[in-house]
Image 1 (tube, rainbow, N blue to C red):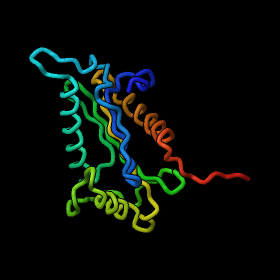
Image 2 (image 1 turned 45 degrees about the horizontal axis):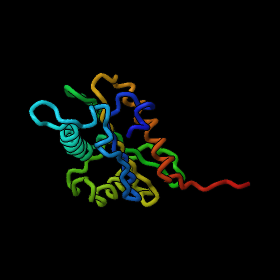
Image 3 (image 1 turned 180 degrees about the horizontal axis):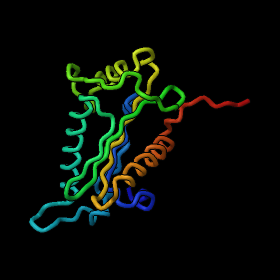
Image 4 (image 1 turned 30 degrees about the horizontal axis):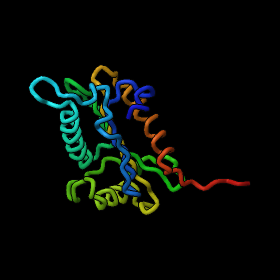
Length: 177
């Protein structure tokens, strides 16, 4: 995570998920030197444990909102800003607008790490004509609460592009002519 600090000041942690490849890109939590390298705080509480607990709470909250049809969220508590984005691309990496907005996934299996069926159903619901060719990506970010929401969303956009490029997800055909 340390290389990202200079590019994304105030970012504490992120999860980038490629739902087609079932690949997760996430820095190790012990790299969170923004929070004193996860050293113990008074009372024996480890900051890294707090971050993990907050991450699990964040993911559970996002899954509830995703089932209700929300594709992006930003909220704040006393310590952090949380952001979540799910987006879809065609086979060559062009972003797609959801064809059927206002979906609800209440009757489908819950989302999750092994919730591949949920994301397949989501693609079919949002893109009924060509769901088999749709790629789905998610980004969870945690920033310090002092970071303005506008900067949080800018960081998310830039980070998604950077991780997508580094992860080798760029599978668009190369025009050699």
